[in-house]
Amino acid sequence: MMMDEPSFELVGETDSYRETGGSGAPIEHKRCSKCGSTIYTKLYVLKNILAVPEVLLDDKNLFQPQQH
Image 1 (tube, rainbow, N blue to C red):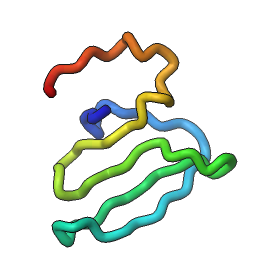
Image 2: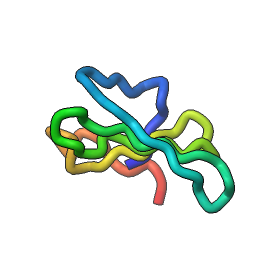
Image 3: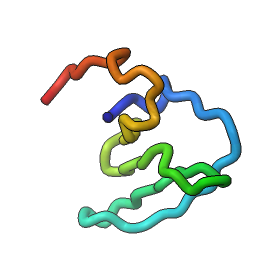
Image 4: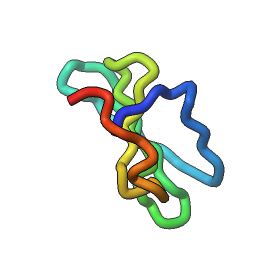
């Protein structure tokens, strides 16, 4: 699920790592320090957008698709 970075709040201990995407722009992966699960991926080629795995949501029906 893609969401605006300014509307995303993260609480808890995390770490991150970066790699370079196909465009040459960085990709940052933020994950839980304790279990290593990915919390979000930030694609710097998309300004202020985070990719958040839906499995992390408590209520998957809370957010309905706005684009396909």
